Image (cartoon, rainbow over all chains, first blue to last red; front, side, top):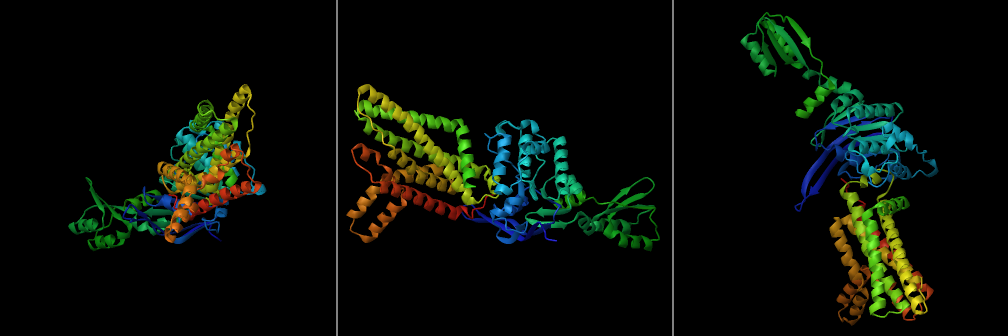
Length: 308
Length: 256
């Protein structure tokens, strides 16, 4: 099965200032998203997410590597026929009405007679701004501008949606509506490339996840693959009757924690250290009163990876 | 796509109160200058019409320069350009569309300004009983004259910031008014190397003198039809050349 979005070894560096100082934005980034998948890209501010998106849209040339969308090079305008894009900070001509803006986007599709008909009311309805059909863009609030940009990204029923912070500036209800909209688009077969800081949304929706940090892809895969690969970092809690100095030292060495209670000691250690720690307890002829395995969520995994 | 971008530029510019006010003020200035020609210089209707065509072309040149600087400069600085280039719109279509739209506004402004000036000239001529003849072709040449200006200002707007782009465009356009003098100077210089430099400058600058036929006609001169075709070809070739130069850089420019 051919990937709808594919990036292979993409790097980008800029030269800035009078001395042409080199600034590295991306290093050897690879990812792929299949048809009907939601790809969630997360990372700190300045991690390189927007640079990667602009490369995907052909707005920025990669220094090395290659990107294909729907099997084509994005630098070719034809390749963008099937893409809907929501920028992080939407800028819309202020003196157009919402209807005119959508009509303009439709006119840019360039499909001639093959262009799907434009359903202005339907698009505005989906984005939750049906009442603003004839309102000038300059009179819209930030959240409504965001919703109009989402509607514009949906013009032409694109096979690929590239959404950079789609829930930015929206109220909680709006966020839920946009989440539902993304899920609905996936159900209809669209591939969604979602760039967001809202980790619970990534956990709830994404079929594949990528974590960018300082321009490098530090984690990439399906949520199940990522959780399995990081399972050793999940914490295990043991309740112990006594705690010898050697055992306390071992807990410290493994990066664990000790909470001393009135009748027992509660020890937290990473699950990868559980086996040697149990062996140590066995040498001391001690059996834990209770062992509890903590479950690692994708959100905590991503948070940890971002912090580290 | 070029046409779509031109339509957007046209629509957005006319909806801008600032652009409308600029067209109106420049129109008033053209009419005032025509009145001044008639009142102080005692210009005949034909001479006053020649002056009106000249002023209207110059006013439209400034309008085109500032509109291109503002429109393209704002697109790049505010990243609005990503709205267009993330669709199946080539960079050439974007730039040529913006240029074409701004040229259309300049041509419409020339038409409106000359209509107002013609009305004033006709009213005064009718009152004084002087015969009137207002030839149409100088107005067409004014529209042709602003095409190279539109291309130059679009190129500078892509290269640099709006203010600098405006200044560069004004500088090159004004220098273009002296291109006939550069050619004359070239003939008086004995050094072949310098001659080549002056010849190159002559071809690089937009030769607005080619389109200044109003005064010649007012003086009773007759323009052969082939000259009109030549002027149109020059305007088209110069504009395409400048656009090609702009595209050489814009084609690979990163739009961050």
